[in-house]
Amino acid sequence: MSNLVQAPEGASCVVAPLMREPLNSLDAADMAVRFKALADPVRLQLLSSVASHAGGEACVCDISVGVEVSQPTISHHLKVLREAGLLTCQRRASWMYYAVVPEVLNVLSRLLSVHADAAPTVGAPA
Image 1 (cartoon, one colour):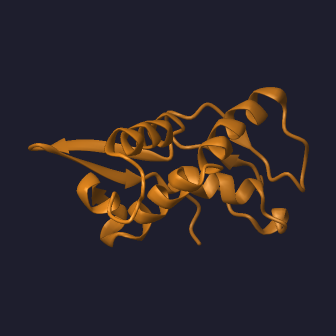
Image 2 (cartoon, one colour):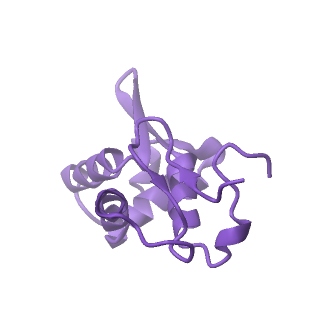
């Protein structure tokens, strides 16, 4: 059985944990976009707000509470998280609802896993 981690549909790479083998340049660039999106405190706060909301989905009106930046800035940060594949969004009436993409977070987590030999592949039973 392989220890490779398959990125979710729409993502282009299969990534092995760093402790197992070095990343190739394409996988490194793909993962860097996601980590860069997470490296901003406001984006991390927004992602955490969505992820911790019931069902891993939240209205933009709910996740912007407590974030001390303007609405246009929140929209920009949410766009960066969507473009990095960390969030999805859906319009319902006049509100946007955001949801985490757990498969992408799992890929990032497994990439950094110290226990690379124990990391299951995405979709494998736990």
